[in-house]
Length: 286
Length: 155
Image (cartoon, rainbow over all chains, first blue to last red; front, side, top):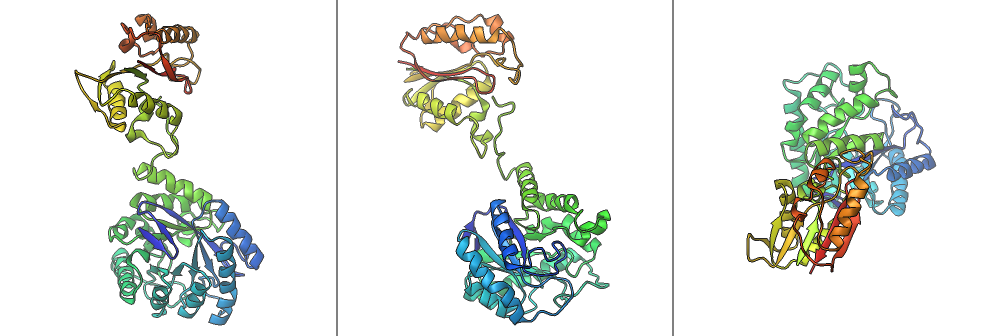
């Protein structure tokens, strides 16, 4: 069983985590959901599209204007409360590395702390434990939050990702987070060049084999763009190809901009893998 | 007690979908097989039909026997050429063939022409020689995928 805060899912379930940016400057939507009502409309849209999880973030990943904890909370916490009240059945994740922000978000109703920066704030696991929240343990190669990778090399990027995420998962476990509430994420593009992200994708099955549920965040990222020489806005096909590879290997959670397309891709691959019956099969069986 | 079901492979547990495309047919089949008692003898024209029958018998908690049965389960169906979308495409003779077979089944004594049945992809071998009386209880009579199915029991 996978337990994400208030919500539980079977071990063979796949989940769509829809990105909801409360930022004026994120790379994909470029501030389209910066206004609270626009972000709320985005939540309504992805819920209607079948997303099980929303991942609410108040700071873009790339470098830029510094956003302190107070401003991050102002962007995220009341919004989480509003979403919680309106959608009691929805899993709410908050994309933050800060324990202080995570604590306030969980108090407002968040179920998951998505720490995209690999445990930069060591107290985040204590917050997750205190609120019975889930935590996403990512690999960044130890970089500082909101920095771009620069000449980072690994002897074996997959081994490094497994080592660091599993260590983070065990640290969360020791802090009191429930075993079924811990997820690992190799964090494509974070502390990685395109070759690293391609190798992580190719070998994602090794992460699945650790036994920890795996989240992948592939959506429209630079490794897709560089591989196909496509700008943001023309990366859906490449994103779905990478998604299919991860799904075949058994990744469980998909952090996405495009819910409908990703859900169809994952369902199709999950059925090819023999983990999901077809929706309605009668051809040749009449 | 005698029952007739079609050898529809979508009824097999291994071919289950998230949404059952044969939910009504399945319910009728289980109701019919449920009337056959605890020991069921199967009469099917091929291994595929027998496989479907075995799964239905298991689903109602009965066992398959070769003799000393409490009921007989026949596996068969009408033409598979009822429409252009049918497995065997449309054959204009199919509707009349099925209508004749229907009359025979309701009377408990079907007499289909085996040669024509083969041309029309009808599975009738287990029905030939049936003499079940006229008290047929029809639980299902439709051709939802261009194949004519009946679920019938006779006392």
